[in-house]
Image (cartoon, rainbow, N blue to C red; front, side, top):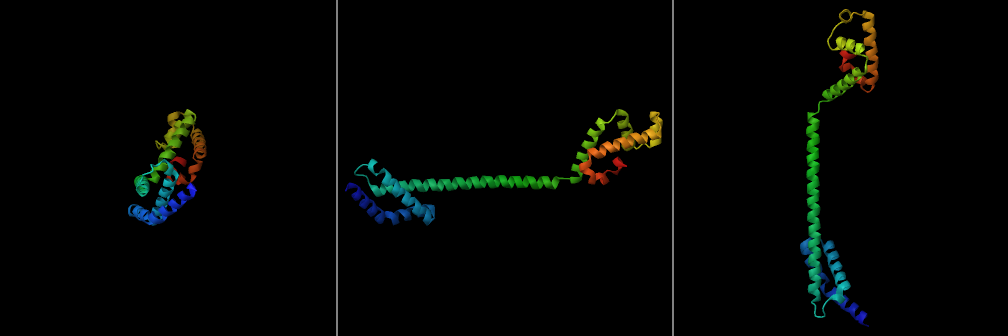
Length: 189
């Protein structure tokens, strides 16, 4: 019979104060659905803890205190969420600004030139020294075949052989950049 009496007390409390509790919560959280949830959660909180309260406790004041704390927690979560969103938006803005400035400063021609030049230099290091020397004299020092042959005391056919050999190795190393060969005709002719 005591439990039935408690249910009647709870129902009476719910009926008498629900509207006031919801209005109180809505004043702070600004959303009637959230306010109703907080008020009902607070009433349930009271119900679960009713046996721990003193007999002379002011039950509506207790529930209102619970609502107050739930409203504060809700608002603090919103503020924290907004701060996180603002922080993340700031990070997104910073990253976007960085991408824009990097893209504006990007010189595709320079990127390809640097990359191709690096590959050419690394590939030339793998060539036999005489082949590498002949290729460098031809392509970088602009010496013709006859000048190279005379300075190295070899035939022009040997010069042509070494240049052809170097070009074959470079073409394999630069296969991914084949479309870029027109930018560097002095290397591949």
